[in-house]
Length: 215
Image 1: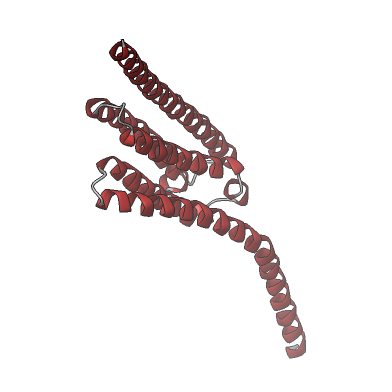
Image 2: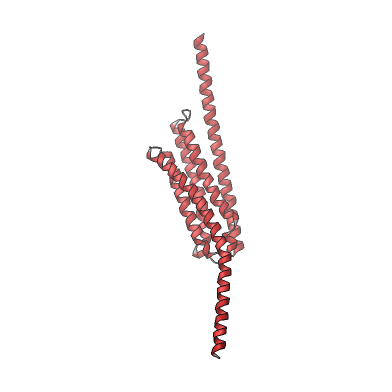
């Protein structure tokens, strides 16, 4: 009897180890991919924040937005990836989750690059730059709020959602932030066109004055 119990015990232990090993084989690559994605996104935002911080210390107040929102993006990404273990593999690996974070990163990068070009242009007046910064602030805030909405999926209150419900929710957020990215790109393009037109007008005036002076 003792021998039978021992054999059954060993069999159960082997089965348990087998299941645990199988779970590790499935889970490890998932976590590795998540870690890689998270690291990539975090590094991008850290680079932006660091570069913006240098400019902020040099007195470039417009880059404070880049610093604030890139740091907020890092915090939200950490909250999301830390909470992934509470939900299924299907949601963890859903590509549109990464898409949401990537587009938010592109929104911040678009602002950071554009505002620096506009700030350095002698053809953009201080009051114009102030208005542009104000509009950009609203856009950055809205996109950050979209990213915050993503956190609700891993919150205790939302753990009863089905995978299908979570994915539909993520789809809506991805569509929403895609629209926000398109809007900030359009606004940036419009600002650049206005800057170039002002520059061209100044050159035309300079050329005309030179011509009149020659006469």
